Image 1 (cartoon, rainbow, N blue to C red):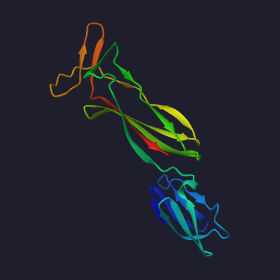
Image 2: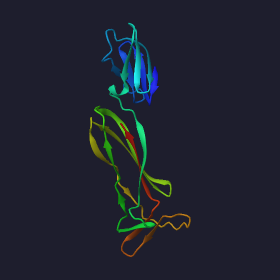
Image 3: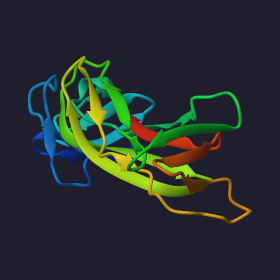
Image 4: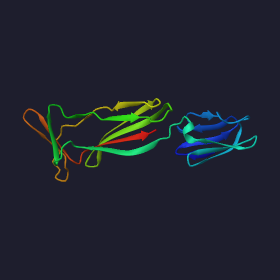
Length: 191
């Protein structure tokens, strides 16, 4: 047995068994294995799976031939306030609604029917004020937009001199002042 980027590969009597979702679902990959498909040993070197057959011989398959989801966190996408000066100011009656979205694309020819996580965070002054996680699946070469639940900026007065965020109540509307340090953080997965 061997692990490759979070996917467990096991040699078995039916070929190569693998699981990429913490052992919830097991798949058997025996296509391309000649004759008796019993595998005695398995290892992964680079992007190649090597299987020692019980009947003799070693076969190899590229990891891309397996229909698996290998989660790969592509990092953080930051979207700062949409102005070049120090603050972004908007007026509204009931607070500001921010609706985060993420575009998910699959450049491979494999369908990814096992759900994977896509997470979005909004931070103010490095404090997470919003976090939402969605489960998603995607077809071969597919692309679509995920829409997270809205984040409504809470109307309250914050007069801490050490903080860059504060809210001021006008006569008829709420004036929300968001500093440039405000970031929309989207963590997503590459398939």
